[in-house]
Image 1 (cartoon, rainbow, N blue to C red):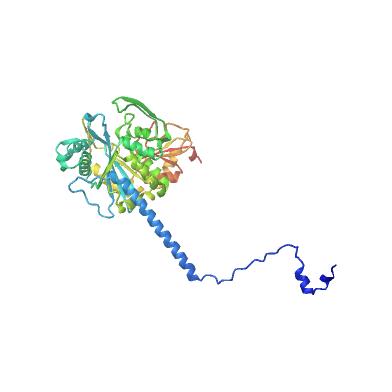
Image 2 (tube, rainbow, N blue to C red):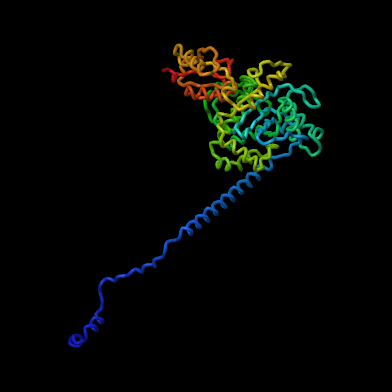
Length: 461
């Protein structure tokens, strides 16, 4: 039966047999190509870099456009006929005015509650603050001798008369206050900014609060309320987180001590705001611009050209390299200008001492230029400790008064208290003693020096 098949040729029989094994798929290899040349690789890299640069430029332009749009409603023209020029490299002086305005009570008028001159040194990347008490007596245009805070109210009410038609009340108040402060300090005021209490609180809330190190217990039994009543407020010593409302109370309270101590607290809050912004970095601060713009809307006005690119870069250059603890804090007070006179509730400062304070305010801070007087207090309860440390500091070149005991003798850590605003000396002492720094006065101490060092048990060797 199989004979026909057996008789077929071998090659035909092989073709007729079915293959029942596994199927094998043979992969086709791509043709071998030469590697790209170096010129081609560098061309691709250049294209990628160019695309990245273009994208970065577009992002920067978009960020600038958003920032300029956000701050544009806040900027007004300077109404002074001849505002001082600001030559490059000379620094910028900005007058910050805290305004007390009560729309529900127009009969109360509008007045300046806070006057702080801010000096920006773009070369040294330095910021200094100088507070002027609101009861300071000055010569006021059209009025004569008056408190310095009257300038804003008069300029506000007589804006058209003083500076011409079309000038808003706020512009008039800012302009006359800048003129008055500049004449009093013999200092050019290049720009002015004003903020009311609501705007101040909203800015801090937009930041998520600020951290304030309260130097001592504060009790004010007569803190004013918006309805012209009073309320008791208290602050315990130590670092604490404050929202806008709480920080505003801290900056305004004064019945527990004085208007001079209040000035120090206001500067402390400004430093805390700078600290919050710096902690976020440039990108984080930029992302906050829309929220800050909303917080300041209707509450903040300035002649500072914030939409100008050179101004933005200058402020950014300073703030990115600024240590908030290095912000110089200066004020006109009995401990910085002791030869003053009181005329009723007005304070008449000695012109020579005012010039000296302004000179220190403008000078680059340094241990030598600050000439701080230091007292060491023994808070560790170890006999002879304060005297020994005082001798070591005196040998290191510091000006030290006789040591004394602190009100407490159980302090665990050493603290350097910067009483009058000598940041360079305070930082140097803190480095030498491995101590913390606080602004203000320790509890139970009547200061007669610029810096108080309270020694803790960490100094016991």
